[in-house]
Amino acid sequence: MLEAIQLRKEYGSNVALKGLDLKVGAGEIYCMLGANGAGKTTTVNCFLGFIQPTGGQALINGIDVQQQPLETKKCIAYIPENVMLYRNMTGLENLRYFSKLGGHDYDEAKYRSLLDECGLQREAVEQNIDGYSKGMRQKVGIAIALAKQARAILLDEPTSGLDPKSSNEFSELLLDLKSTGVAILMVTHDLFRAKQTGTRLGIMRRGELVREMNSDQVSHAEVEQIYLEEMKY
Ligand SMILES: Nc1ncnc2c1ncn2[C@@H]1O[C@H](COP(=O)(O)OP(=O)(O)OP(=O)(O)O)[C@@H](O)[C@H]1O
Image (cartoon, rainbow, N blue to C red):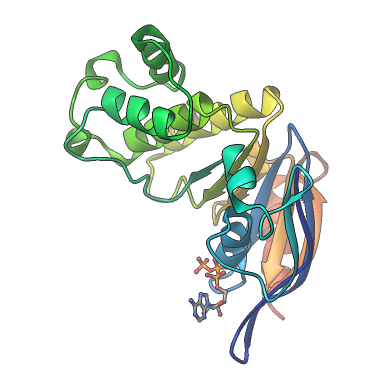
């Protein structure tokens, strides 16, 4: 579903990605870990078509993002750390607006049920976004992804700054998406959530994927130990 083949990105003499090979299949949650500057956001941005790789390919459903940017954008959704929504519009209005923009229109009952599914409190649905917490905006972000019927979701530190309960609710939503066969690539610094939610974990260091593991084959303590070992080099 999401595939990087020898993906490379250079900024002058700084090599942000050194030929990354990565696969995230349908129904997988791949958690990408690594220190600041390791190349995680660069990877996500290549899949989104926000930046042009210097070499290699980013593929979505087998389609090259660079060659067919509009086609690949149709089936993906992006959830950044801060979901950008129109502050003077309600959650419901934002969902309807972004859904239409993505080419899907539904009746109001469907929009409400999507927000409900994402755990947004009923009383918040018709409140302006400027009164929303970060966690509430994330829920609208997921509702937008559901409305778009995205088959792949890219997330960049989505739980950063969320309280443990909101973070847990968010992880539950990702697990629901996973069970519907969505391919999920999530950049995170939260080792605990990565182990808890991810199916696979990958550690990036200076533009390279230096370690991959299946989360069901390692304990929380081992994930931390392996991560710290990799960061020594
Ligand atoms: N627009 C840019 N111009 C020049 N260098 C850049 C640019 N964007 C990223 N870089 C460099 O590319 C490297 C990888 O950056 P990237 O943002 O992908 O790291 P990251 O792993 O996402 O880090 P963080 O955890 O801090 O978000 C870094 O050395 C960064 O300084």
